[in-house]
Length: 166
Image (tube, rainbow, N blue to C red):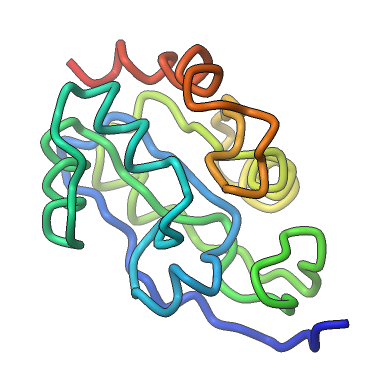
């Protein structure tokens, strides 16, 4: 059994004044923490989905990923600021300290919040909704652990973000 450790979220949110949607994950995976950017696992479908939905090429590095997000009015962060976690296992998350979304919500023109997966949605409702009073739409997780969802199936749900990208 993996050892649980208390981990701090050290990846800064991506947003600007033009951001219209906020996509929140739960907490960065081990691969994301190593790469120091969101959705860093090579099999995570997040960047492939966004590239497909925006008609852009698949972004390669952190700067290309930030450019894709900001060009399409997308803000990205996570619900959790720190927690006890075993590796990348969302089901092992304990002792949650939530991120404060105030700066994003006061700076950007966020019209809709989306959560990337059930854990992010559950934690958003528990820790962030009381502060934000903004309902989130739960999208199926892009994690490779969500193998039951093909890219095509994910696209049928993730296309809900498209009206906000224009």
